[in-house]
Length: 250
Image (cartoon, rainbow, N blue to C red; front, top):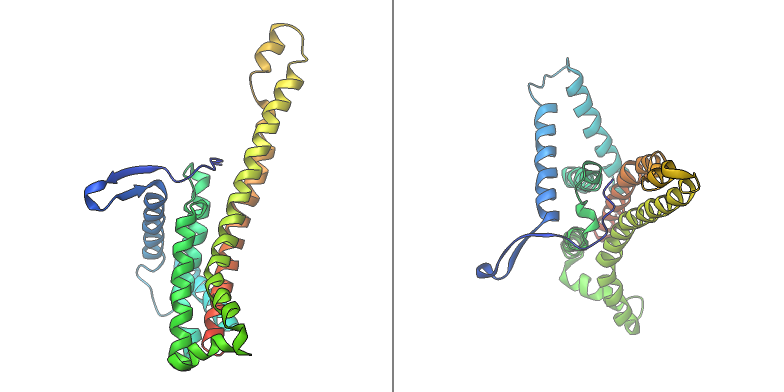
């Protein structure tokens, strides 16, 4: 598991293009998207009306699961249908970016700008649906409800929506990295102290090898890299559906 908790590493900077910077997070995100496209292509290749291959059965199960999830939160209507691809893609990208740390990459979800971009996109969709279903007048009127004096608080609440989603997702992913890094450091110190008690040259050699780092971090990785990744993706998508559904009056 990659436990680096520093900021995004810049791979390329082009001042002539307005200071354009290509970061490790961007490259990893592109790779994750490419892998997701290839997986989708593989699962949907040579599809038949009646599935004969396991990969088509898996593909149909995944699509059905996402459809059920979206319809349960957004309703079995037009709104709950058109957002199925978006929610499915958002879930897969979020989970895939988080799990990329298993392969030694720095997870893009540990880069605040990545998750903030998703939060801004969701905020745009929320605002779009509020205006679409309530009109521009209804959207502006919503800031004055239930009483006019609440307008400043309603504006702050509106701005806080994408920020809260962003920092919830970002904080939970980064906290796992911080906890794992602390455990790695603590086990290294403990290994040095315990093995250093062995007398002679054997103790001197073994105390330099963090043997206690083997085992426990791998178990924690199952939680932080897999379970937590899917859980945070699920929570982010659920909040997205709730906010958009609420904006549309569902």
